Image (cartoon, rainbow, N blue to C red; front, side, top):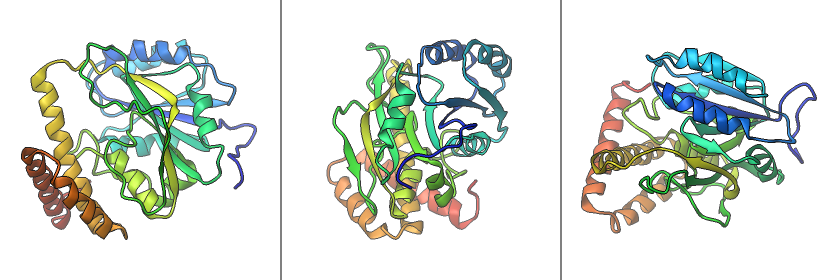
Length: 291
């Protein structure tokens, strides 16, 4: 396919956003969406991932505040990978973009996503993630201002493409079977985002980090204890990601070499948490306690 194609009656881009128990953040998120201006036709798909607060009420009200077709779906089973799959099933666009409920897309976000896929060989992208509040801890961001290509059959490092700002061609996600239901916040292991990218790369698809599509992350994390806990969860999830690569990907020996080399530059505590995550993932997989 030489260019992104879509039927005249379908959106070109589906922006899929999953939320859980963050009703208080939704008003600011929808206010940011209301400022988005796009030449390309697009839609919004919101997935309520089993919220126990008044998320549903807020979504029904706020969805009327934006001038874009909005579909609200529910996924009661916890896990961001599973919730994203539910959103993909409800989406209609040829390009599937993803961000989080505490991120604010730039005014030109949709059009910059479309431009990023102008090359027919680019199957997926990750975009720039900036801090919304400079007083927040600089975590879960990506600020590089130059492209970083990801050739087919690459080892994809965690953090290069993040779920707060990524997009896939629909046929690529379908080819790899979507996101892993056993991964993502809400499960024992994060990294549903890089896992999908790694499987796409291992299937022979090329992608890239591109700086033009921008979101601002309003995560509000300043407490040192909470930040340390988040880093620990990332280390644990990274180990599970490496373990899954060993089980499934034809690039497993590249991944093994990359992991071994990375151990030499990481703190011993981070390496230990990676190993713990890898062991837990392996045991759960062998005893069929995933997903």
